[in-house]
Image (cartoon, rainbow, N blue to C red; front, side):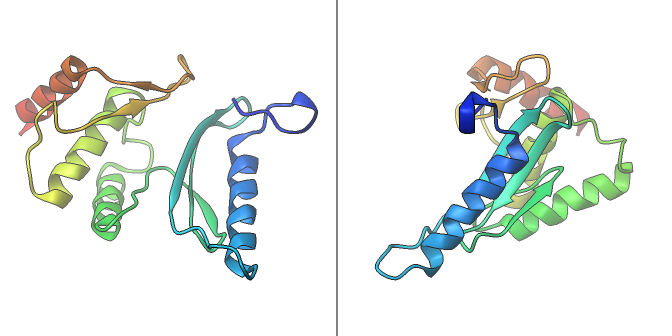
Length: 151
């Protein structure tokens, strides 16, 4: 958890707002190089639970249940939206395995390719273990096999 003023932990929504404000200042101020990246910030708030924010270089930020960034972000966002609409707002299991497999199937669909466990890297933060960790190749392979069995 990030610390803010006086050693208090900063919740993800406030950190997203702070980063967006910094981006916006760099966009307006002369003689500074504007930031040219989109950030996806994930975190767990003790009061609100898991949160996901997308922050753009102009200083705009918004919360999502699931989002994407990059060259095919529109296609990925459409796929995610269809999954949420198809399953209903609470039917998509975003806890642990459900979130991982939704992310992998979104990548598979958007990029029109099947991945090997060594070709993708997956990071995970959960309520039970709020520390960011990267899944091992074996764990990724287990999820890929589970997705393959569903097809």
